[in-house]
Structure formats: C-alpha cells, structure tokens
Picture 1 (cartoon, rainbow, N blue to C red):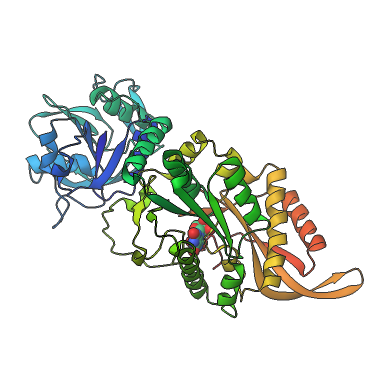
Picture 2: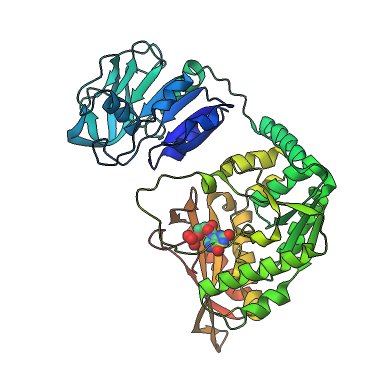
Amino acid sequence: WILILDYGSQYTQLIARRIREFNIYCEIHPFNKDLSDFENNLPSGVIMSGGPSSVNDEDAPYLNTNVFDFEVPVLGICYGLQILAHHIIPGSVEKAERREFGRSDLIVDDDSDLLSNIPEESVVWMSHGDHIKKLPADYEIIAHTDNARVAAVRHVNEKIFGVQFHPEVVHTVYGKQILKNFALDICKLEGTWTAESFIESTVKEIREQVGNDRVVCGLSGGVDSTVVASLIHEAIGDQLQCIFVDNGLLRKNEFQKVLDLYEKELNLPVKGIDASDQFLEALKGVTDPEKKRKIIGNVFIDVFDEAISNDKSFKFLGQGTLYPDVIESISFKGPSATIKSHHNVGGLPEEMNLSLIEPVRELFKDEVRNVGRKLGIPDGFIKRHPFPGPGLGIRILSDVTRDKLTLLREVDDIFISELRSQDLYDEVWQALAVLLPVQSVGVMGDERTYEYTAALRAVTSVDGMTADWAHLPHPFLAYVSNRIINEVPGINRVVYDVSSKPPSTIEWE
Ligand code: XMP
C-alpha cells in the first residue's frame, strides 16, 4: 500500500483516487503523523502532497524525516518536493519571480524511471509561488519547463523523487502515467486491491469482529447504507437486522419500492416502520429549515431507539461512513461555517451503547458503488440521485402538511420519471422539485386560478460540493411543465432554477 502524507493541498484526495485507480490501496494521513503507527503494516511507498504554505513561513509544515526509516520510494509533489530540498539546504526554496498557475510545457531530460513512457514534451499543470533555486548535492534534474529549471528531480542513489507540477490533476496529460510509474514500477506494487478482494477481506473482518453477536443497521434508501447492510449480511446472515423508517417525507411510493428491493431482491432481513404520523406531528407549524432538520433527526433517533430497545442482543451498529468523512484533514483555514447541518442515518447517540461497524469507511463514493455492483445491487439503484435524509421536508418551503406533501410528490414523480424516460436521468447529478409558498394567478379554461408554484432544479456536479444548473433541453422542460400544470391540481406555475453552487446551494433549504 501507499502512504500519502497530506500537506494541505486541495488535490490530496485526488492523489488517492488516482493511485486507487491502479487497484493499489492507499491512505491519507497528516504530514506530522506518528509513523511508528505503521510498524506492523509498512507501506511500500510514500507520496508527500502539495500544500498552500511556503516552506519559509513560520510554522510551515515540515518534512517528516521518519519516512526514510521505511526505506521505500518517496515522491514529493510540489510542496512535497520543496520540503525535501528545504530540509537539506534551508533557504534553497525561494519566491519565484514569475508565479506559475496553470498549464506549462514539460520537457523530459531523463526518461529512465519516473518519467518513462512520457513524450519528450507534454502539458503539465503547475500551481506554485515558490520554486527551488538551489538543488541539493545528491539530486539531479530529470525534467524542466521554460519557467522552472527544476520541474522533476531524483536522488542519484536512493529512490527519492520530486515533481514541481501536479501529476494527480487531469490537466497534466501524462500525470496518470507518472503516478503509475511510481506506484507499479518504482514501488513494485501489483494492482490487487479490487472490489472483489475488498469484499472478501471485509466480510472476513466483519465475521471476526461480530462473532455470535447481532448487528442493527438503519437503511436510508441510499447506496451507502445499502452496501453496508449487504456486506454485513454477506458476513453474518440473519444475525443482522435492518430497519427502514418511513418518515412521511419520502417520494411517491418510495417506502414500498425500496422495501421490496431490500426484501425481495437483496434478501435483507429488514423491518419497515411507518412512523410518518410521529414525524409529521412533530413538524406541525415548523418553517425554519434548521429546526426541521433537528426535529427530523431527533424523531428518527426516538423511532430507531424504540425499535431496538426491547432486544438487548444488539451489540453493533452498522454505518455508512465514507472515507472523505474520516480523513484527518490539515486545515489552514480554521473550522468552516455551518451552512446546513446535514442529518443522516448516522448520528445516533452514544448512550445506545453499540459498537460501530463502518465497513466502507476507507472508500470513496464511486468505490462504494463498485462494491455495490459486485454485491449484486441493481444498477438502477446504484445510480440513483442523492436524496437528503430530511427528504421532502426541506423541499416544502413552509410548514409541512400532508396536502403539500401529496402535491410535491406528484410534481417530483412527473419530473423524475420524465428524466428517466427521456434518457436524461444519468446526465444530471441530482434533480429535485420544490414547493414554493407562493400563490399566483393563472387561467385555466375560462376560470381564474390562484395556486401554488413548483420549482424544478437539476444540477451537474462531481461531489455535490460545487454544482452547475443542468442545461436541460427546452422542449423537455416545456413538456414537463405542461404535464405538471395539467395533471397536478393545485399547481398553476412551474419555474426552473438557473443558479449554480456556490453561491446558491443545491437544496433550497
Ligand atoms: P446543498 O443543499 O448543501 O446539498 O448544496 C448538497 C448535497 O447534500 C444533500 N443534502 C442533505 N443530505 N441531509 C442529507 O442527508 C441533509 O440535511 C441534507 N441537506 C442537503 C443535498 O440533497 C445534496 O445532494
């Protein structure tokens, strides 16, 4: 496996993604990690990421010299390279006269190892303000650019390499090849870490961890919790009990559809609990989005707790925690502001006294999907758009009532089913309908109407952190709008949301 030491770059996770694409396992840890933690599980190579600091700053992240104790190949990227040079000759890294951001032409001087199978000239992506002025004695240059004499280097005797550009970003055309040269040829790793091998070892671990005890798992109807439940089920069979709660805020027929999938197609032992009355009662008259989230989260905990409280045999709770949630990140910006307090099936209180099982806590979302496919979860389900825990509750921009929910369900169903039938569903990252608390005048037949407005939103995105509104074809929007206004009594106007995130968010609440 490969250890990635994080110096705070926005691209650190990308390095991990690229390495894993070669079916090689890797982990991200802070640069100052105590490396003796890996005594019993030594890495075969180390990559040091880029970072926003300058090595000359006071309190700048430093070189973790213990990496050399492993006696394995090391690759420094950008800041990771500069810190190598700075450690050997303090002051060898200086502010560049010309800062370099964006594309640059790399000229290879030596293609014998790190840069093998790279053309003599290729485009790389730079992002740095400092550069190496003086190269330490035992290092030699293996590539340069017009602006940077030192674009790639290697130690003359040891397997230590450094690049000033970012091989992990797609704009570096041969970046993938460079990382492959490092991981496969230089670190001598074989790509054996696949979805199948992950399933095999994880199932074995769960079996050992759980023994003869029982596990409870809250399902959300989403991919992560479903994959977790399937993995645990594969390991311990009916020692697992799943719980799927209808909070009354699901989409049209969703409770039954998802329950059927769990029971009939995936054979999961699942108990469906209709708690919609309890949720809707607690939400009565509440309009503030954060209050809604809190109430929904609390009622969920009550319902879940009650469902398992009679049965003392549960010792474990299965959770769909993902890798991005557990990476100890190096933050130079301080804690970020809470924009929305997301509620997931996760946040159950500690008093429940259950030990956690988090089988996908080392995986990225797309890796979870791959595992899901291999476990036989239908593709249609795996490719489902994300759906927030608080459901339609945060898509009704006023107090939540049964009538409004019925209205919104019909609108959502027309929008989503048309996206599917016109082959646009997989083109967008997420699509949703919002019920606005706005009534407006319309005319139907010869009658005046005064009814609600529905907003449709569809976005393209990679991870939900940033998003653009989806440029859906106008005839499609016209058709959907027409269907909604004709078929859903109570709606006489449809608008399409053309805002990106940031500054807007994906959900309206
Ligand atoms: P925003 O609206 O923050 O949404 O741009 C980003 C992604 O997160 C989902 N979302 C939630 N998911 N609980 C969830 O489980 C929540 O409270 C919540 N709020 C937003 C949203 O659907 C989008 O995919």
